[in-house]
Length: 198
Image 1 (tube, rainbow, N blue to C red):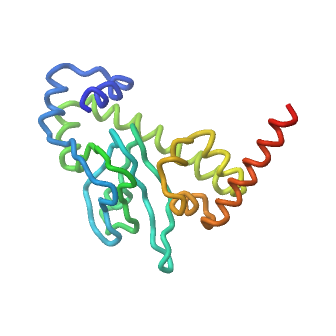
Image 2: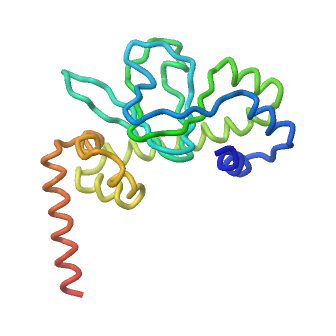
């Protein structure tokens, strides 16, 4: 798993052997079972996550119903809002699959950035990319129909349709599980007609 991490980092900065050793000495690689809750609503946390393997999700409970707002899979980074604003969390974060995560806390990150300033450069680049991606996703969500959202998902993140339970996927798309079933059937029917005509 450390090679996967170092390959990812090398896209942003080059690391010396000393810097690699410093990362490995931090004891930041953790395994979590499917269903593990990493953060609960109302809890305070300093932890940020980087997914090396697996899938985690953010969800809220509104009127007794789970509302999924994001999925994070391999090579995705997540710093919960509560870490930034130092307030109790408004959301839950849990593992959709058995996952291997790099877990760091804000104190550790500050110390590492102080010792190795290039990490701060990488973090800034990563944060910028993440913000841009979140804005695009948010705009697409607000301006598209459930069918368009699902087609976007199939295009951009097709693996989620196999990895995530249907009720969580439906919640993420802003529809009921029954509506997702009908939507899938409709899309398959359209594709079958298109294939038949070509």
